[in-house]
Length: 340
Image 1 (cartoon, rainbow, N blue to C red):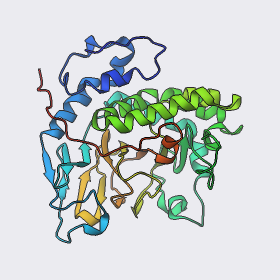
Image 2 (cartoon, rainbow, N blue to C red):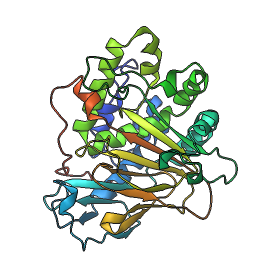
Image 3 (cartoon, helix red, strand yellow):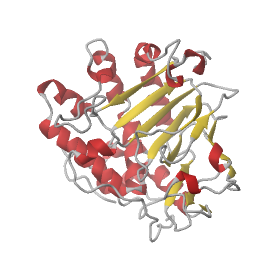
Image 4 (cartoon, rainbow, N blue to C red):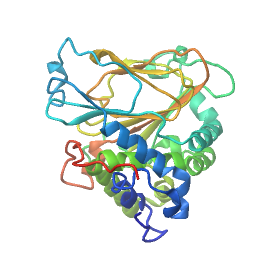
């Protein structure tokens, strides 16, 4: 098992993520104490099963959406799967039950602490993402949505000399107490997602690490606390509590990088890909990775239980401020380690 060089090395999970294929099924007791809560062995085993179950799309999906064949029918996916293009580029990675139950429960409880922030994200008019009718007041969990970022550009400033800054949703005086606690209490969930992203797309992961380290080095005094607290290698994350999603693209993402969507809570949920004629059983604790800019996706209403969606996004514009080379396509691993 890889060892952490120093507890001060904020992104020591990189060493672990790059080795997931080798120690799938290994003993978590061999991991540093601070990492045992992440259930690395569980993540590794789900990844191994996914890469051994390949679903192939017979068209060059990675080039552009317009070349999609009309007869593409993925059907309903229930087993861990990697969907690849004709030239074997992984495009959708489906990992049911990748997030350990104790991690899932802790994140759901932590989300209660930002309930008023999520509620403010609902509007009676405007974009469908914030429309009140999208949300279902089922019971204990809050309803609403908000996006958070450890560093992004204000609208219209992506090509300026300004540095990316933590989102106002994190650092505003009204929100800061709640968001600080929330970031600390969801650290294990964010580490779990980091590990998965590092294992399936190391180039994207490293670009995220470099951007965040760069922001920490050059942060304004008022921003230092927030870039230090920000755990995800992803540029931003959106939290949607008890909400459905219309079929949509996420145009601010990157075609070559994965968004990571995870469902916490209700098990009878479906993540649909209408252009591909398919959907994935979106269990509580499931993680699905794909480019939201490439694939239209949706979450329709569900029947039983409450849910919270955490969606993690990589912004190429932010990465470009700290790394000249753009992120390339994810690749299939040459060999996936067998369970010991």
